[in-house]
Length: 378
Ligand code: HEM
Image (cartoon, rainbow, N blue to C red; front, side):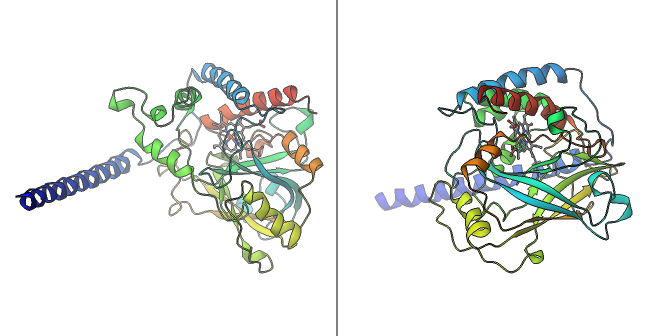
């Protein structure tokens, strides 16, 4: 009797499981079909600015400052995002000798030119945590002594051209309105619920929740062993582009990083230190751009959509090299903490475009000014 009951239960359970799998598969296929239909071109190649963007931006700045204060270290106010650095290192960005004429704009105007730069490598989280925690990883590059008037008039940043990226190709919100509601919910301690704002399924952002979960990825073996993406679009002269920085070990002498102990809280800094300072081995990357083809669904106002590489392949414009160096000193770490990166520290030829970038202009400036003032930093 017991055996029959058990067999019946197993059969029922098996059928339920199969039904669930079929339903999940169907939902997935329907989702794919829906997005293939929704995300079909053409799209605008111009920016479209919603009327309430300025108000939303003000509210987001208030939330950002609230978060910075919430996560305040005992002594210092850290960045509201990418608070923990693995190090700031000196880098060189060399424009390709044979760069295609059509891509020679802004800092890439002169083939062969080498720019000196600072590179800050970071975890994405709003407060420092163990490097093995799932997270996005950031790379910010600041080219120095770049002539020409910049989009932000601050004299302190007059000679700078910044590139600010992290290691996932898409962002977990599409625009400023969604950022505002999601960020406010997260500031109130909501995580998954930030993507399910009401009982109405039409307000659910399941696709964006999946992006957020994928963005929080396991750590790479080293901060110089992953690809960093601009995610948001920019101008490059007349083109609309996205950019990325990909590891290019083929341009460096062969080097194998010894296995690191990823249980150590700062193992990504250790990896960087091992390669650049102990083993004196440089790290090499390529800076690449992807041009928008507005005949296809490559939107400017939706950072949650990846531009299809099959339609718009990335093209290399410069080599980025990080020479062997000593970087982990008290002075340099403090200097690094006090640096400010902003995609709007830029020549007009590299103008940031799209809602998320417009938002970043005001938020980065406000949070940076706030933390510098609270830390009495220069
Ligand atoms: C395209 C999407 C984005 C990327 C690739 C990105 C990447 C980064 C990176 C790498 C940093 C660290 C820069 C450094 O090393 O100092 C950073 C800082 C920061 N990000 Fe973003 N971010 C994005 C979107 C946003 C958005 C939408 C906001 C909020 C509106 C935001 C707010 C901030 C703030 C406040 C900082 C710290 C600024 C400072 O205090 O200097 N980010 N971001």
